[in-house]
Image (tube, rainbow, N blue to C red; front, top):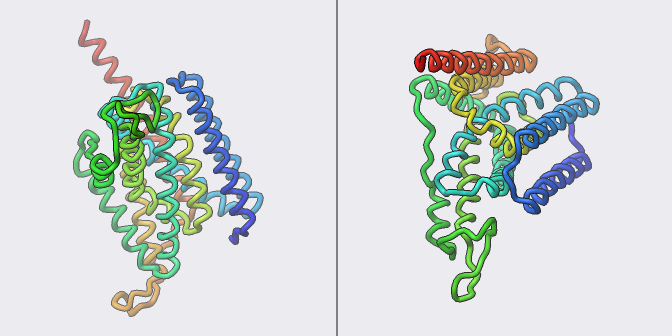
Length: 330
């Protein structure tokens, strides 16, 4: 598939306008969204993502649409895991619930900008060095093994950029409602601690991208599909944070499902690297013909099926735990 310059321009302008509209709506009326509001927003973003898939099918072909849907579904499911850490960050920095929407949205926008750079670098590397697939695939398999190797509560520790911001930026010690800038007792303009929260959310999400972006590259190597799938997945993350809320701790098998998905895509990447091999010390620098090709249809089925089973198993486990607790009280 070939993406023309005008299509890139229209896409960037359209998605940028959607993000800007979202930011304006959040900034004008800070509040904690209701369950109904979150459901409508999440549903709306999912519908937009699927309508874009139909556009890709019409404008390109079914293969492009399938790769986009697989990438979007993978990115969206992996982003849910980010929400655990977002909850910890919000609690640690004591952000009021009515201002959390703004914090999440600005942090996600920062993350999208950084992910765009990662996508460009990854695409350039893959186009020149096919052996990068070995690295991506090995890293995903390693991550999947870590998921199955142990289970622990999500943790958050301030990264280098957050510590730098605390040390260098002129800040007050108190929040001023939802403002990013305020004035101290001497009338000097200072950042509020909200700037640190923005950086924490954005950079933490980029760290999670170390898993998700290689996973998408295992499903498609076209930057247009990778970028749009990432944007549509990230844009619904803010409302999903409030929609899931206290249900996050009930998704007990989420990590296992994500581990299966990452492991599967990692193996797929390694097989693809073997099929396109040009490393001189492996098979004399020739492609390995026995490496099977895993089609996008099968990949999408495995990803969707694994996530569905994970969700069903988590619901059943929560139901059984609730029944056991009720029986114990009696």
